Structures are given as C-alpha cells and as structure tokens.
Image 1: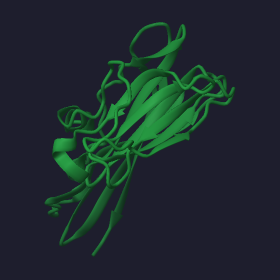
Image 2: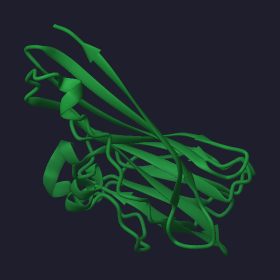
Image 3: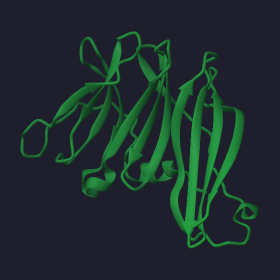
Amino acid sequence: MVRLQTTLIALSIFVTCFHSVSGQENGEEAPQTIENPSPDGRFAFRNTGDSDSEKQTYDLIDKGSGKVLKSVAESDPDLGASARFKMSVLWRSDSKAFALTATLIKLGSEVSVYLQEGTTFRKIELPKLSADIPEKIKRGKSFPHVSELDSWSAKQWQKDGSLVVEIENMVDGNDGSITATRTVVLGFDRSDKAKVLKSTIKFAVEKS
C-alpha cells in the first residue's frame, strides 16, 4: 500500500526550504501561536494560521530570537480546508531530535523525523512501511471500504535514542471491520536514513 506521505507531498504539505512568514492577501497578519518548546527551552514551533486563514505554516524557531530555523509544514491555500493540518511534536529528551505527527482532515496522519545538525535540523528518510491486512485475516469476508490507510503516529523516544512509531490500517464493510496496528522501533545513526530495529503487528476484528 502507498504511504500517506505520497498524498502529503501532492498537497505540498512538507517543504524543506526556508521562508519568512507572510500575512494574508487582505494585508492582515495571520494568527500565530508559539508551542511545543524543546526540553532545553532553546527551540519551539510557530503555528501560523487558523481555520479562517487561507494558508497555514508550521516553523521551527529559535525561541529566544524568534528566528525561523526551518519550515517543516505548509498548506496549499488552493485546496482549502482539506489541506489544513494538526501537528503533534515529540521531542527527544536531549532536544537534539524531534518527531512530527501531521494529521490532515479525512486523510490520516504521517510522521517526519528531524535530527540536529549544527544550528538547525535535518530531515531523516524513513523506510516505506505499511500495516497490510492479509487475506487469511479476512477469512473470505468482504471489507470494501478503507477507513484508515497506513496512518503513522510517533509514540515514544526510548533511552537509546530509538523511536517507537505506530502504523494503523483499517477496513470495514457489512461484515464488520478489521484494524491492523503495526508497532515499529526505528534506529538512527550518522546516515540520512532510519533503520527498522523491531517490528510487530496486531489485528483487531470486530463483527457487525
């Protein structure tokens, strides 16, 4: 199955370029909030825009100066409300890494991981993983509707620096529903790619 990240890229959600936060077309400043500070207090995120804004951005900033260090998310105003996102940030205890869980309306969620490099952070490539539901779990029954497709969420940074993520897939139909939950432990070294250290999957079957 194709990860939700493909959809997010198509919506121009995740960007890697630097940018300055601009006002709305009518000249008014978009609402801003400072949130999710790092454990050491050096960094935080600036969420610009609300439900009435044409554009929403999410920037990593230096908390003291307010300087934008990296733009991590940007909605496409041409797509309206469907491109708006809710961001959850999970900092590592040493403040040298963070995991973002971006949730889009009706599209599920996706995880991005950044590690500190000098005065900014670099994005780490995550493996392409899914929570597939095999036919033997369906037992010949029909589940034609996909309620949730490979939604990722960051759960916990472990003491060794690895990250626990969950991937959830759900299908339903007249015979009930099946939810697959895959738990993956990702390891990080000096490379730009994360490695799977451990992976388990569980299935929950509910009858209608």
